Amino acid sequence: MTNIVGHLINGEMCNDATRLQDVFNPSTGEVSKQVALAANITVAAAISAAEQAFPKWRNTPVQKRARVMFRFRELLEANAETICKVLGEEHGKISHDAMGELNRGIENVEYACGAAELLKGEHSKNVGPNIDSWSEFQPLGVVAGVTPFNFPAMVPLWMYPMAIVCGNTFVLKPSERNPSAALYIAQLLEEAGLPPGVINVVNGDKEAVDCLLSDPRIKAVSFVGCTSIAESIYSKANANGKRCQALGGAKNHAIIMPDADLDNAVNALTGAAFGSSGERCMALSVAVCIGKEAQTAFIKKMTLAMQPLKVGAYNNPDNDFGPLITQQHQLKVSSYIESAVNEGADLVVDGRDIEVPEHEQGFYIGATLINNVTPEMKSYQEEIFGPVLQVMCVDTMEEAMKLINDHEYGNGTCIFTRDGEAARYFSDNILVGMVGINVPLPVPVSYHSFGGWKRSLFGDLHAYGPDAVRFYSKRKTITQRWPSAGVREGLQFAFPS
Ligand code: NAD
Image (cartoon, rainbow, N blue to C red; front, side):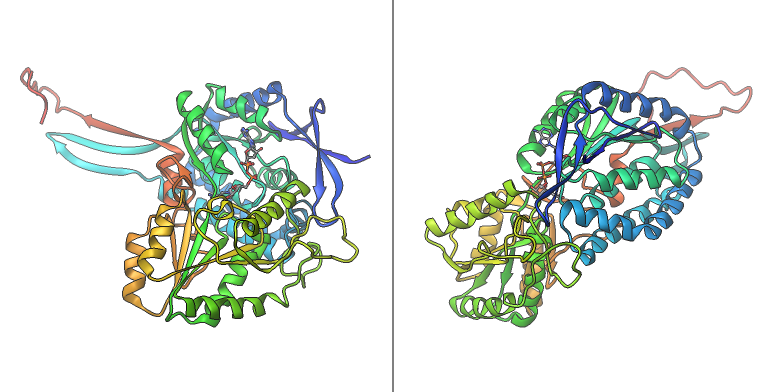
């Protein structure tokens, strides 16, 4: 009998086992457990718990709220090995990659530890006779987060530490494909001293998300996932009067300039294209070479760099990357490779026939290199989300930038060059939210916010960092006068100025 992953509501683990879904160990292809898919009544119970916890939590001094985050941070470090094992079992991440994910999550908790400073507000004295004015940040109430499979620890940590430290209470709906890490980490947060009901985790699918979107007690929704769902969540949340930020998919290009340090570029791109099996929204999945010479040299060096790559189960730290999340996704990635070939691209390295001894049923695809990809190909237009690097060639940097600017996604991009002027022009004019200059994965640190442009993000505010303070709070501006005793001011009908 497999065990069942349930929910955390009001400080209690619970389980509504009416609908269950298999959770796989992608490294072996076996079902390891089942996840309970929350029914409406369970989601409503989580929202009620969060609503009841809100008044007291909102009035808890900010420094005390932050102290919980300090303890939470220590518990995350102390339990890092367990968390990484869970990430490996359900996602397939190798331990070094899982640790990288967790560390990035911990950085967001560290940022939340500074809430007292972040929430100080603004004050102006004597804005008029005996009048002072100040702005303060007040919490919204109950807010929700809906997160994807590819960062089961980090993406929830982008959201709730800041939401909670700002005085909100939270309902998290993690990915049903790997639900255990988020549940385990939320329990650590309670162990750190968070009162019951401030964080609640409901596992589930579309039914749970629809329930969060339609419940008027939810004041804001943070979503991360694919673009089609991000767009629909954003419009539903807005139609229901909720604040929403919905981060979507990506197609991240790297420009290889003729003057680039090619060895470094190939090295950086190998990790950025194939790391985590390409299941990263910041994965560099397209290399655009400027000129045939750069393209030929790049393909030659990249082919060599790919030969020693080791693909296999999460629990062998010598492996470079692991399996894809499900068999369905494995088939989808394969079909993109096939479609590129059918549309005329050149398959230089084919990862589809990879064999991983003792794990023949795992959901593996090896590193794949496709050359001479063109803009009208389906594999170029859509997000593959697998260990597939596609290579294109254009004559000038302007043409490469036009390709990137014309693409529907605008999450991340990078230029490899030794030319400072070109790099500066590129970063200034490219229509992408996160830009790297000789940095392949320009994921902002926790004190800068994260977000793409175009159809990679719906909403105005980016995730974590300073934008999170704005997203998870409402600004209120108070203007105050204490007239001197006995002084009467004249009647005024003109607009005060
Ligand atoms: P997904 O969109 O399938 O799922 C994300 C969440 O939405 C899950 O919790 C899922 O249960 C829920 N969901 C699924 N279908 C739904 C529906 N019809 N209605 C409401 N909710 C629904 O995404 P995924 O496959 O888990 O994750 C991969 C995607 O996430 C990729 O497109 C990747 O680029 C994107 N992603 C983006 C970022 C970013 O910061 N922009 C970060 C990580 C992942």
